[in-house]
Length: 68
Picture 1: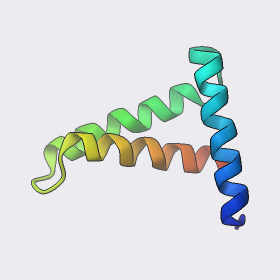
Picture 2: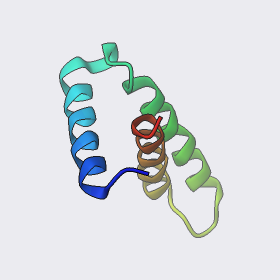
Picture 3: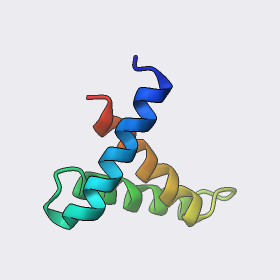
């Protein structure tokens, strides 16, 4: 398990890389897929809305990408 400061630093670097590299960056497609799955799940669940699901799905996919 990484320290939270390392995790935040790596997440910032990863997001910056995705912003600069666009669809060519290796993390962009998995994070977008996680966001789409989260949005669908959020739309189907009665309490959670799709924007919350989208953010949660993207965050989970990014976390998995960083912690591999």
